[in-house]
Length: 173
Ligand SMILES: [Fe+2]
Ligand SMILES: [Fe+2]
Image 1 (cartoon, protein in one colour):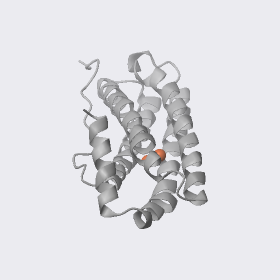
Image 2: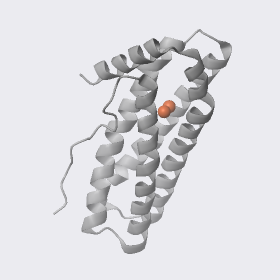
Image 3: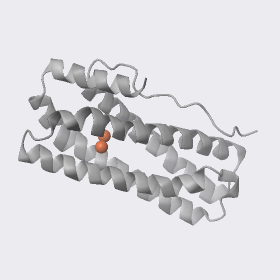
Image 4: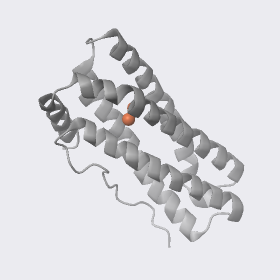
């Protein structure tokens, strides 16, 4: 029996450093992205079974919770803290916020299909939507990890990173 929904588990448990929270999410996204692709691949080859349907329900709960919380952490706890500090970071923030809108739009399309796995009629469409979402999210994470976070590590003091972590914890209350 496939559960209709499962509880969301926050990938971050330690909020003493805001950047560490974001890195924890990035690691989790990369890992779950692999599982998402594997699930779509399995459905496209064998159709929807009990196991893949349960995995679809789990991943739907996961991405519904994580993409919303993670974008909120970045846009509401981090960006306001560093905006208007330099042209470089302001340009990055603008670009990253646009990415978030696109990732959310890709997820909304995939979510429509994934939330009712037993009704998946077009596995090719599922594969295409999954690949598009996973690639966009992964590319965005790589950009943040390689270009954005190293700049922040130089810019922010341990006290400021702790303050950003506290804001993130408050967003979950
Ligand atoms: Fe982001
Ligand atoms: Fe991120």
